[in-house]
Amino acid sequence: GLPGNVTVHPPVFGERKAAVLGAAAVYAQPSRWEAFGRSLAEAAMAGTALVVSAECDLAGQVTAAGGGLVVDFDCPDRTAAAIDALLAGGSDGRRAAMGQAAATWAARNFAPALVATRTIAAYRGLG
Image: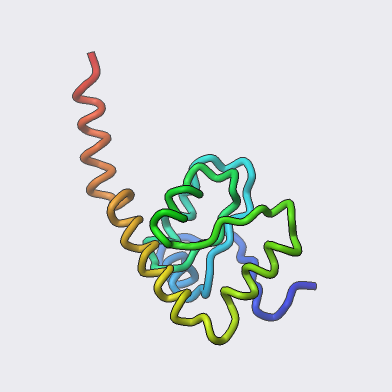
């Protein structure tokens, strides 16, 4: 019963995941309980505009980076209107700019080499 421009994918991995995220117009993460959105970071690294719930720990960073929209998924009419506006034909440039901003934000915060360096530094700092 979903509109034709909405796709809910089963779990995808590896190159298939990169292809799905890279081809998406937006990545919507409606979770209230996923504190850290790893999937958000992966979608952002693929240059995809994000739509996240206000409860997500990354919501403030997504907004500050200009990488997407923060919505209240408990208000489906407003959420649908926000996503619909983002998907509207005249907003391709806005979506592309959000995707680029999301990619820049993700590279600054979640690049594998950076995460590895931070993790090693944390372990070296232990007692």
